[in-house]
Image 1: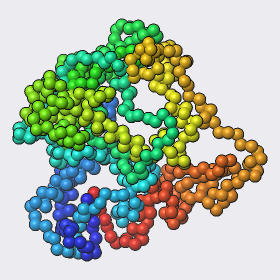
Image 2: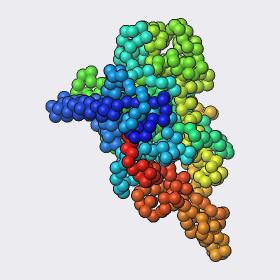
Image 3: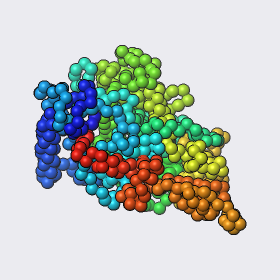
Image 4: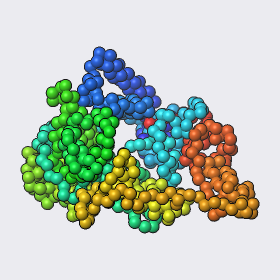
Length: 582
C-alpha cells in the first residue's frame, strides 16, 4: 500500500480519501508509543533485568548479535507496525470522507513493484553522498534478477508464503479452533517428541550436517532459468520444514582414529555448545569428521534427543537452565503465523483431515496417539510436528508434506538463480570441461583435502560404508579437481597485431578492454568479444562520469542506480509534489 500527498484531483472513485490530519496524528501516536517502549527497554537494560549474559539465552544472543542494519530495520518495522494499528483504529473510529478533495492523502492498493525505476517514489529533499549504490540502510543482496533487479534496491527480504499468515499484527497464533488456548510448545515437545533412538542403516551423520536435497545434472546444461520468478525463501521452509535435521541428531559426537576405531571419550552435545576450544586439540577435527563418517544418523521421525530438548545451551552451573530446541521450532512457527499442518496437506495434494483417524495413512498409529493426547483438534497440529511425524515417501527420507515444501523450495532456488552453476547462459556459463571437473568432485574429496592427516574414506560420505557398495579407499585415489580447465590459452603475438574487436564505437586490439556502455565492460579475445556487468560502488560517481541518457539505456546501470534516475525525473518535473510511502 502506498501513501501519496498530492494536490491533483483524485483519479478514481475506488481510492480511500483520508484527511491529512489523520495520517499526521497516526505517526505522532506511533512515535510516542515507540519512544515509550524504547525508554522501557533502556531502563530494564540499565537495571540488568534482561537475560543473564552467562545463561543459555544470553549466550545464544551473544553469538547472534544483530548488526546496525538489522537493528535499523527492526526499529522501522516496529514504528510502522504501531502506526498501522493506530491508523486502523482511527479508520474505525472516524467516518471516512470519500469525496474527492484537494490536499488529501490518497491510499492506493497498488500492485507490487516490478522493479522499474520509474515506480520508485521519493521525497523532494534528497542528499547525494558517496555511499554504496545500495544504501547502508538497505539489506545488501546480489543482483540476481535482470527482469526486475531494482526490487533488490528496496531491501526487500520478506519471505514468500505458500499460505497466507493466520495471525494478526503482533498477534501470534495462540488459539485452538475450539477457542481454547493451543497446547504450549514445551508440552508438545515432551509429549510427542520424546527421546527414542532409531538408528539408520543407510546414512551417516554427515547427511544430517551437510546434506542438501537436490538432484544435479550428470551432463549438459540447465536451461530452466526463469528471470521473472523470485528466489525468496518460503516462510514454511525456513521456519518449519528445513528443520527436519533436528530429528537426526545423535546425543554424542563420536571420535575415531585414522582406522575408524572409536576413541574415548565421546563429546556430549551439551558439552560442545559454544565450546570451540576443544577443536584446538591436535587432530580433533580429523577425529570428529571420521566420527561423522563412521556413525549412523538417527532415522527421521518425531523422536528427538534429550540433548537438544532439555540441554540446549545449558549452563552447567544452573540446574534446568537448558532450552528446548523443538519447543523453539514450534513457537517460532506460531510467531511467524504459519497455518496448521492440516492446511499444508491440502497444498501438497493430500486429503485434508477431518479427524485424527484421517491421518493414519501418513502417520504411524503410536505417533497418532501422542498427537491426540497433545492436541484438541486435528486442525491444531503444528506444521513442524505434523510433517516430521509422517512416514517417509518411497525411496526418500522425508514424509510427503516436508518433501513437497522442501522440493518446491529447492526447485525455485535453481529455477530463479541466474548464476546457477549449470546455467546455459553463454555470457556466464562454465565450459563443458570446467563443468565436468566440478561434477566429478565429491564431499569425500573435499573432506580429504581439508584433513590434517587424510587416510581412507568411503566414496559417498552421506552413505554408510560398505565393502562392495560404498568401500573405503585411500584419499589420494579419489578424483581431484584439475584447474587446467580454467587456464587461458596463450594468445599468439600475431593475433594481437591482426585481430581486432568492435566494442561500441571503438576498435579494440586482442587483450584490451573497453566500455560499450557505462556499466558494461568488454574485453577482446581471440574467440571474440566477452562482456561482463560492472558492480557500481558509487552511483553518484557514475552520474558524474556518464550522461543520464546513456545510463538510462544501460539495463545494468538501471538495475543498480535506477532510483537516481527516478530522483532526477521527479525533481525536474514535480518539484512541488511531496510523496511518502510505507
